[in-house]
Image (tube, rainbow, N blue to C red):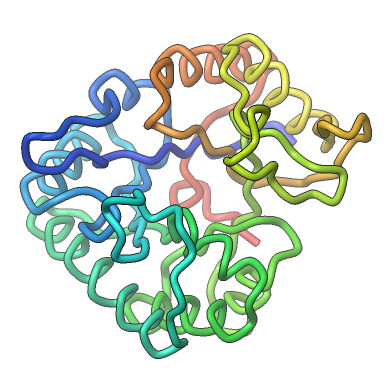
Length: 258
């Protein structure tokens, strides 16, 4: 593999509360997952983040989450498939409005936090998310964990899908991400995150905390924008991939999602 998409979660400020360093992250990524107002973000933040991505030539994706700003959308809430469909349409539709106003469209959709992990495992929730994405725009690329119910539902819905790896998250030998409740959930050393990204692109493998390699064939690699040194991680990952001869480009540009 000589090409990869590098995505990052952006637009997670809200009102007077600032989170992340979006301006510093945009130069190093090819796709932005923009919060849509439920777990984080607000209309002004969405508009500003879309504008910044457009100026940098970064592809725009919707990052809808559960309505839980106090928990940053990372706590599981009991919702029905209908509710999952509706919250995706509501949030991604709002971001689409800002994208259209800026002269562009959404390129992809990636659920946030607990909603992401629910859609990874729960067939009904996965179907609801995928159907919502397709109903909003059948040209959207759906991001998710390799082998997940979410990507399977996306394929059944007729969407292009992209398997995702994480440069700044640790893995279990099963291929699942280490729970954020654990001290070893995150990879915060930029050099280590960069080495993991290069290896997963070049070799299709990433080390787990259990001492075993996990086989992955990602089309996109995620960096989280809410960690304090996210810009340093993003730059290190970007530069290491470029030095390894890997082209960083958005999936919508190169048109080869799964």
